[in-house]
Length: 160
Image 1 (tube, helix red, strand yellow):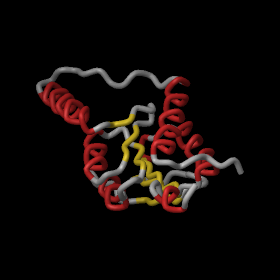
Image 2 (cartoon, helix red, strand yellow):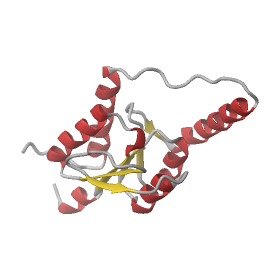
Image 3 (cartoon, helix red, strand yellow):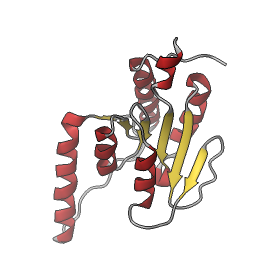
């Protein structure tokens, strides 16, 4: 593997305010195999071992803005925020949900429209459903998708 291929994914950045611990465990484990820099950003101090943690204020979008400002082409950003995912994609980075779903440009507009409709319904006093309960299959899907993204970028894992 050439150094140029290895540099394509320099960082895996995590929107850590609501990231499940099991996802962080997977990211720490795979970092040893793929050699990326793991950066977590949150609006409060998490005890996150094995990552460069950036704590920001608790303003409405401070964590998202800090994360976006650090995102470069080829990076992978882990977030469940569809709006942040759309901005990340516009920077040429990859966006991945903690459930292992890769956000893609052709689908993000639909997701943003759904978010708008649900917010509008809540403002009208209606209730909307939240996400389904997290399962072990979500962790399996997350790891599988993350590995696929590395392979897609020509980055192979190295057992250490």
